[in-house]
Structures are given as structure tokens and as C-alpha cells.
Image (cartoon, rainbow, N blue to C red; front, side, top):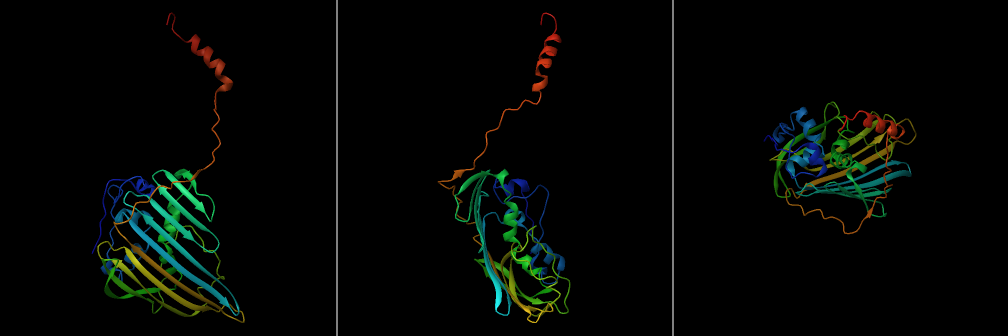
Amino acid sequence: MALACSGGATRTEAAAGLAPVPVQAAGAKLQLDAATFGSDPQMQHRILGVGFTELHQCLGAFVLHVHSHWSWQRGEEGVAQQDVGHLRVDADGHLALALETPASSLHLQQLGSDLYVRYDKGTLRQKTRRDMATLPLCDQVVATLPQALALLPGVDFVDPQPDRVDGRPATRYRLRLASPLGTPLPDHSPAWHFPVTPPPRWRAQLQRLQVAGFVSLDAATGLMLRGNLELSGQVADGTDLPAGLSLRLDLLLSHVGRVDPVLRPTKAVAEFRRPLRHRDPLHFFRDQLGSAATSSSPAGG
């Protein structure tokens, strides 16, 4: 089923939480078809490439939760990391965002033009929207699964089956490696980088790759409601011990149209700002301007 979202507010207003939703830039349309997702590569790219702004415009209020765990292992040495992203948008366009990693955490609330931010266990600070770009952070959460799929050398979406996600009818596609390996999916991630840089050319050196997972697409809108990816393999980079890679990622979009309001915090510290100094760009010429104004006045005026 194809989708067309329409409305009257601008994308900037929608992303800023300044307008009610659902909204859409004047004259713009978003056409997604879940039925052709498995057979149409262009439709795959369009659905996987949906960002926060489009998601917000089409669904209005929703909750998005993403959990990922990945690890590199070489012999007895290795590194592992768990990341959690939680995004909640209410019917007024106000949002609450939480990003948790082993190294740091960020909690953010945006209500109209006001922004409340807490880093790690620090103080909750009140800012203005001009002080911090929130859209890239929201896009980072939305793009988590497409970003992980872009790591693979080629993916097929097969075996469509009816599904229900949080009470909404959906179509579920199973993931499998393309055979023969096709063109990798484009990287839909924003301008962000992974916390740990992988070895050079690791994708081309990946062996014994095993992939499992699925995506469930909303029957009414074509948007991704749920996704799962499990990946494992070895990177033969010329060393005595190959590096082992494993990744598990789960995504769930729920509570569409029924999200509790994002409440304004009762206590926050206003961001310190230096008082603006009065500036007179023409101070060096002010006397001459006064004289010129007097001499140019009409007689008896």
C-alpha cells in the first residue's frame, strides 16, 4: 500500500517541535510501498533512508527504541560495547531523547524553542535550540539499523509474511545474504562515526559470514516498525589469529499516536551567558553625523 503524507507546516517547524503533527512541507509527498520492498531495490533504499523528519511528519507521536551489542575478538583480547537509544515524540512535537554508551550518556528534552540537556551524571541545563543541533542526534537513532545493514556485502529481503507490531498490521521480511553477492546497501547514516574504528578493508576480508534477522514494515505507511539483525564472521587480515566480529541489533517503533506528553523539567540550571555589550558601529563618526543632520534641516523647520 502506498503512502502520501500531506499538511501545511514546514520541515523546519516540524523538526523544531514548533508545529502540531502530522505535517509535511507544502506540496511534498512521501511515497512508500511495503508490498514491493522485497523486489524493488529503489524502494528498499527509500524506506531504509527515511530520517527523523519524515518519520515525524508521517506518524506524529511515536516511541523508538534501539539496542545494539557488538564485539571484536582476537584470541584472548577483545572489545565489546552496548549502546541504547530511546526517542519519544509527543503529539505537540516535543521530544525526549536518551543515548547511552559505555563511555558517556546524553539525555535531552526539547519543548518548542527550549532545550534541556544532561551529559552523563551532570547538571540538567536549560539552553535554547540555537545552542545545539538536535536533528542529527535524532537521525542517528533512526538510522541505526540501516547503518548496520550497510556493513554487509549485499542483502536480500525475502519471504514476506503478515505480522503485527504493537497492534498495527505489518509485513515481515526475512534477511539473508544476497546470492550471488550484490551491491551493498547505501549508507544512510548521518555524518557520524563508529566509536571504534574497524581494521582497514575488513569488509572485503570478512569470511564465514552468517547473517539472520528481519524487518517488519507498517502496512498503512510502509515505514519500518521493527527490525532485528544478528551478524557474525571472521576478518582474515593476514595475522596469525583472525579477528572475530559479532553484532546484534534490535529496533522497535511503537505507541504511534498515543504517547504521553513530554513534560517540562521542574528544575534546571540556565546556561550561563555573558551580557551583551552595547555596540555603536558609528561611534567614531557620531559627532559628524549630528552636525550634518543639523545643517541639512530646512530653515525654520
